[in-house]
Length: 509
Ligand SMILES: Nc1ncnc2c1ncn2[C@@H]1O[C@H](COP(=O)(O)OP(=O)(O)OP(=O)(O)O)[C@@H](O)[C@H]1O
Ligand SMILES: [Mg+2]
Image (cartoon, rainbow, N blue to C red; front, side, top):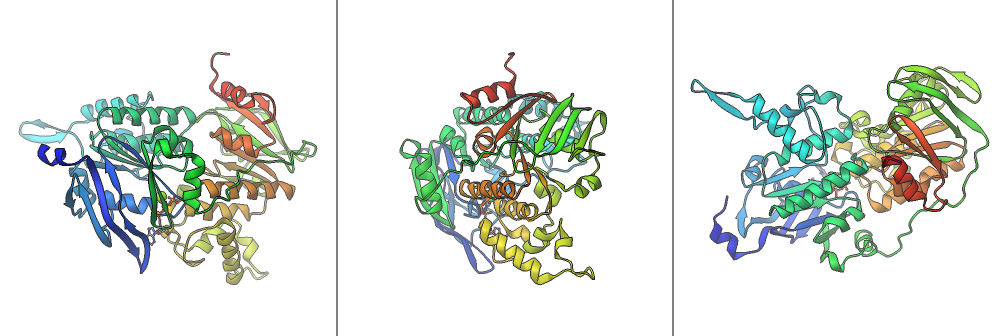
C-alpha cells in the first residue's frame, strides 16, 4: 500500500493518461484520460465493443497498455500481472464467470488465496475458517447458502454471486465490477446495489460497468462514456439523464424506444401445457399461440426456466401432459426439434459458444442442415454470407465472419450466438434472457427481430427477470412463482407493472 502522505496530496485513487490498447494493429482504446476519485462510485458505460472491459483489464493488470500510463494515488504503476494490482488492493469482478466446476463454493471463493493455519509448524489449509468467512460474505449479500455445495450445480445467478464474493472476501480498496448484475434476478440485483452502496460508505472506491442505465443512475456519483474506444466524456450524476447518456454512447439523438404496437390475439394454439407437474412445477396450464409474443416473468428460481426444460424433456414429468397442435407430445430434446420448438438457453456463452471457431461457424452451428447441399457438404459461401448479413443487421462489432469469436467483446459474442437462433428453423422459440449483456441500442434491435419472428407466424416466448423488457415486448405476461402460474396480465391493463411485480414477489397477498 502507499503511504498516508501521498494520499493527502490527491483525491484521485486511480487515473490514466493517454492510455491506449491495440490488438493486431487495431487500436481498440485511444487516449484515455480517466480519473477515479477516492470513495466514489464511477460508472463506465458504452455500446458493446466500446472498450470498457479492455480498459478495466488494463487497470487490473490483465493487459499491459500499448500506450500511456496508469497512476495509483498519483504514483505511476506498472502492473506485470493481476497479482500486482491485487497486492495494491484492486480487485475486479470480470464479465466472464470463471469458476472451477468441481470445487466447492468456498474453495472457489478462496482459490489461490487459501486460508491457512499452523499445526506443528506446518501451514495447512483451514477449511473451517474459509467456510465461515465465505458464508459471511454471501450472507451479507442477503443470501442464505451452503458454501460446501459443489459449484457445478449452481445456476447462473449463484455463480455470479460466487464471483462477487471471491472479490469481497479480500477486503479490497478499489472494486471494479464488469456487468455484475447480468444473470441476477430483481431481488439479488437490488441486494447487490445495496452492497455496493455499503462498500462506498465503508470508504471503498468503485468502478461500475453496466448496460442497465437505471442501475447506473441509481448508484453512480459520476459517469464516463466510451464510444468506439474513445472517451466521449465524464459527467456528474446531477448533469446526467438516460437520454443524454444514450446520445453520447451512440453518437446521435436518433434513439427510439421499442414498443410493440400490433398486438396479437391468441387463436391458433400451437403448444398446450396441461396440469404439468415436475419436481419444480405444480400443475402448470399454459397455451402458446402462433404469432404471439408471450412473456414469462418471475424472480430467479421461480420456475421460468423449468417450464422450458419440461417442454424439452430435460426435467422429468410427474403428471400432466403437453400437446403440440392438438396432438399428444412426448417431451424430449429430439421431439422438441422435430416439432420445431427451439430453446435458446440463458447461459449461451457457456453452453453454446465455441471460442476457437470463427463468427460464421458459431452462427451456423445449431442449424447446420440449412447450409448443407444434397450430398451433405456445407456450403461455406452461404455460411459466410449469412454471417455477414447478421453482422450487419445486429451490428456485431468484429473484423468479419472469419474472426475467431473469442476476440469479440462479451456483448458481441452474445449477439452472434443469438443470430444463430434467430436464423433457426422453428415455430416456437423460447428465449431465456435474450438481451443479457447487450447494450441499450442493440437491445432495441433484438426486440424488433423477435417481433419479426412473431410476424412470420412463429410463437415467441421470452423468459426474463427484467420486467420493463417484457412490458414493452409482449402481448401478454404470465407470472410464475414457486413453480406455479400466479396470473396472466397484459401490459396495457391499468397498473400492470405494479400488479406483476406484486405477483412475482408474493408480498403475502
Ligand atoms: N484479445 C483481443 N484480441 C483482439 N481484439 C480484442 C481482444 N479483446 C478485445 N478486443 C476488441 O476490442 C474491442 C473492445 O472490446 P471490449 O471487450 O473492451 O468491449 P466492451 O465495451 O467491454 O463491450 P461489451 O459491452 O460487449 O462487453 C472489441 O472490438 C473487441 O473485439
Ligand atoms: Mg465488456
